[in-house]
Image 1 (cartoon, rainbow, N blue to C red):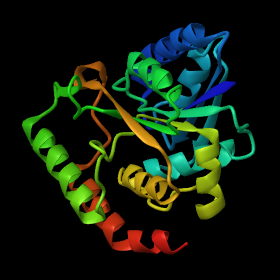
Image 2 (image 1 turned 90 degrees about the vertical axis):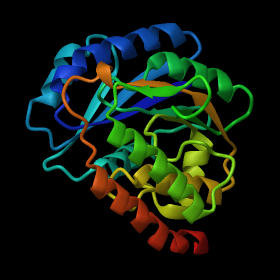
Image 3 (image 1 turned 60 degrees about the vertical axis):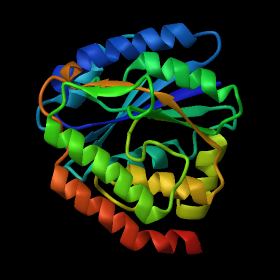
Image 4 (image 1 turned 60 degrees about the horizontal axis):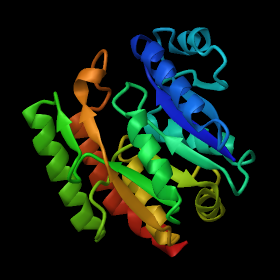
Length: 249
């Protein structure tokens, strides 16, 4: 059984040493049960992020895929899923994470426990009891909660707390169902709204979904978030407008 960790990165060179260290510890923790491999998608970094990954990787099995220019997280995830399409066996799992150290590997360990209960997808949620957002601006908190609630209403999604987090765990069979229906890249949107798109598509293929609480601490990040708030909100609204066509496939 293999655990592929898919991480999109853009100008994250300062965050790479800690991230590689955390992933190496995770690989050691799951050794014997799962083989951990990491796939980075360097989305047009200009600060040597890809080189820093290779320098820090050590014995951790790492691949670096690269976009020559910045295309957005949706395109980065699509590249990663397309790369994994021919590699995945039915026993494998794929985790997607932030590249800035705000996705805690301790939470991923809890997500791996939840998979044993039969769920195909496990989401990390800062909005559940036991989670939370810290060291984040008040404006970002208000917009995050507001956008999360608005999108759930617009798409008619019930019973799921968090819509947009990158931090998720997927079984290989559910990804294969998505790839059969929507193409091996799965995603069509290019921005941060891609995670809302992906969740809507998971619901369309009848994925069994659970959530675990995630503390998200902005202080773990070196540098600024790459999310642009108003662009992301416009992207969420675009997901609602074009999402109806996914249901017809």
